[in-house]
Image 1 (cartoon, rainbow, N blue to C red):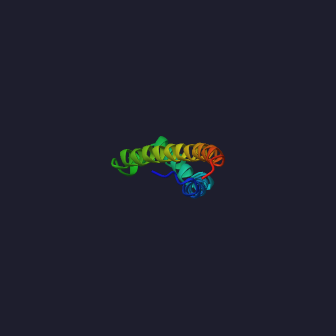
Image 2 (image 1 turned 90 degrees about the vertical axis):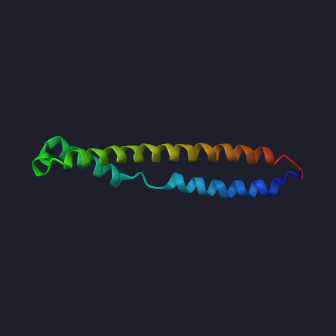
Image 3 (image 1 turned 60 degrees about the horizontal axis):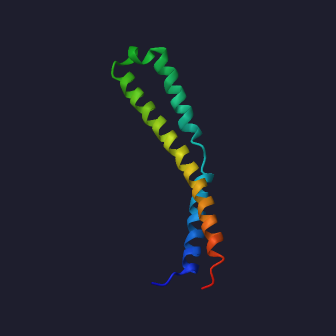
Length: 98
């Protein structure tokens, strides 16, 4: 089985470009703001006055927004770390003559 260094280097660069695009995406500011506003409304008790169905619904939305925000932050961190690893791989591959 032949080890195609150039192909791996090419795919690595494409992967780095994709990972860097993930890193550059925004910080989900609007989702965080929405979550904060929903918390204010929930804490105020106004939702219960409007409908008894709203508090659990808003709580579920807030929980899911929190998960989304956390997962997104984790994805950005993983992207940054994988770029560094792939760059190290490419550095090692650059010493191979094929």
